[in-house]
Image 1: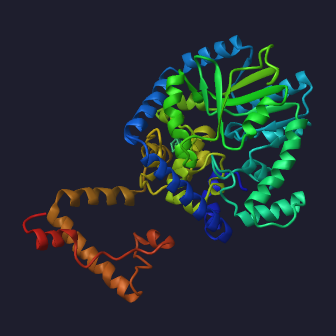
Image 2: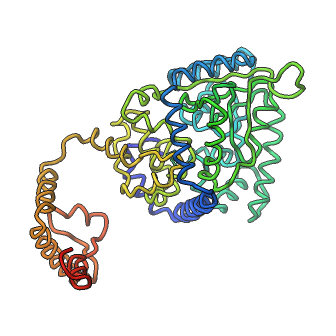
Image 3: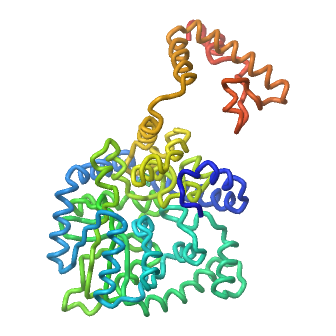
Length: 470
Ligand code: SF4
């Protein structure tokens, strides 16, 4: 996978021609989006709950510095350790230090986008520490020496047949077409890894400041085994994930699984309050929380602060027509889809991910799907403005002409008639679609056809059927 967001246009073209990818994406995004709509519709008042969730996230962001301090105090009071990492590199260093201090050599990890973001696994490998991914999707990605293509479903890009071939090649799995058999095969291997690990790692979906709790939502039980069995648990969590109270958690947990996987509730909601107490026979003896900044403070002080309200459910990816067609790898970033197109330039520097804010039709499906109503299209537009503060003269003149015609209805209608006649005549020559527009509009038809204007304009239809002025 090419991890350069500036290569998005080339990567998208490759993705569009990949038949397996198109099959996997079609199935994956449609299933996920359909399930989300279904379970959201079951709620008494989904719109009100959504606004309640949005308010909870925005309130938490307002108090972010105070909540982080409260979180730190609570974790320490529970017997855990808190480490602050300004950059990804610092987070990696801190984790290796913990491993050295406790003599840890072999870890298991549940799914965490934060650790993907900081490139933890290759860093640990360089330092002689083995780490096994235990989320099935992440495990497949690790075997494939690739990267997740979706925040929630890391192997959205693979068909079942591709996973079968990978397991047969890398693990020696006997041939099968049954997903259940493949899962059982991987599960057997992963069980051994849980038992042999001397430390476990996780991310965190939420941090609850009032009790110093890290919450990890999973469906496979690997989160619990990764963090409960080994003697040391290290959680790496982005600083934006902190919320003040369990009451807010109660609001957000109604929406996260619904939006992420179309479930009313995930199978496991793991709640970590630090290391095991002396009287508890199970659980880790040491608990470390690494609070990851890695550019989030800069977003916090910018006009894009709302992007930090994201609860990483992935619903905007499934709903996005661009993601549905090109998948996650084309974005060249851990965070893909609409929210990835916002946060990647903000985390990596706008010019290092310049094409991403333009990888959107601005249809608004992302915002509609978002359980916390993040105004993604607005932020994409602002990023476009930042990246291209001055438009080419032709664009400026075109916009002025458009504004002038909108203010003069007769001119607008005349323009419509001329454009209608022109596009219809061009379409006649090429069998119904305009395949080549004349300059300066030809850039449009470089990549797609242009549908000719309808024979009858809406104005004309209105006049005919309803009478009077439109
Ligand atoms: S922006 Fe909204 S829909 Fe997209 S991942 Fe974040 S919370 Fe989910």
